[in-house]
Length: 499
Image: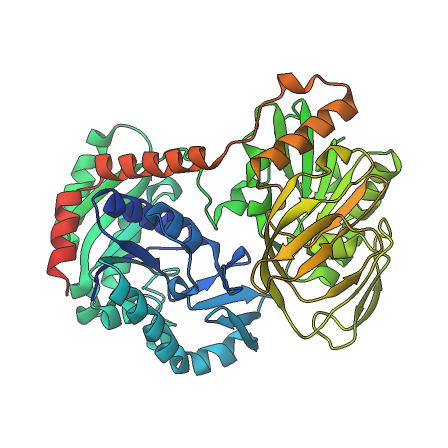
């Protein structure tokens, strides 16, 4: 069975996911077969595996860092919030049902066998498991109902724990000490190291505080990790993506709807020199973009109502009427049609008028489509005609069927092997169910070239999309940061000793 180590945090967004990815990369570089694991993940940013199963993207990033294929074993429980008090429950990659928070907590312990079956399978196949916790282990109102999230998982896996605090938010010593102080004696004995994350400045000024926290907590500080700018997906990073940056040569506006999901669909576009990718949540921030993107959402009907009430729907229509392109993905594609129908109450029930820019009608179904796809763009017209024949690789996650007479892509369901037509276009308005539709480097470059030509800009003065080699370089830089600022000798000793 594999040895394991667990990263827990003083709060959400302390940096657990990225540091876990960094440890995965370091262990891989050191010759170990390593896999990530997070028993329960709450996120709208999900991924479909090669078997057609759904998991959180944070563990996909960690699997990439470890150099292995993502597997639903790495994230057996995924919670996708549908409102402030309820979530869709996904177990082993498949929808188990819809539950409010109270009902989920009441049945949570019943899922422990599913969690441990996944963990034990990974443990049999690997040398090291890097486990990530969720939120904080010091949520005293939830501790009794934690069979597998934080300390419960550490206990089950016999995994020593490293606790990460975020100094960038301030109060890191109080974060770390308060977290440790709220643990019971058994839990405290599992904590073998503390990490201060996102540090800026002169580390020598921090040294007296590091020594003091080690003394009063009785636990060594095994790392002071600087605030570094690495181009690696982070599931908590959407909060930082509401930007008012100046429009560049090519300006792309993504509608920042309240239940936006899979914002990684646009990650490839963020890194192109001369391109601004802005997340827009009000008419005041709309500006005059060259391309408007309607992203995926966990609740199409509610987010369409929000677009309508905020005035952004009118802005999108004005943008389209001016001959500028609009692109909808998944829920955004559904919104662009003429009508949404929800006969089974999957979302809001009843019928709703769409934005009306595409000649489509969507009916929400009780069955969730989850698959990976590959193929090409059809021969399309309009401002984005340059996408014709470009490669498409991605995945679908949706509950709804959309009737269309003018397909945007010709794809193959790589899980079932069935060929199909996806999406729709009319004029300069385009829509598709495929997440990651721009991820192929050739496709992203063709999109930017088409937008440049539409504006009369020489495409050669705009940058190119980055490829897989660039992503691997970022993981290596992350590993370099971990090695330079964490005591890897001590961490290996903690890993070897176990619990």
